[in-house]
Length: 57
Image (cartoon, rainbow, N blue to C red; front, side):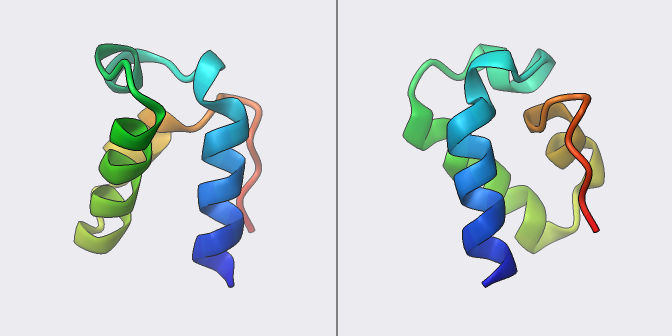
């Protein structure tokens, strides 16, 4: 469920996503990068994809 919420948040906010997400032009590519980062524990990519004002509990 948390992954579903996270994917939804990213899909809604990908327009304002900084750095690595800017290199990805397709929304599905952003979601794939986010999913891969979550799976691999790559917090830097996760932070790059999410907007600065996102609060994850």
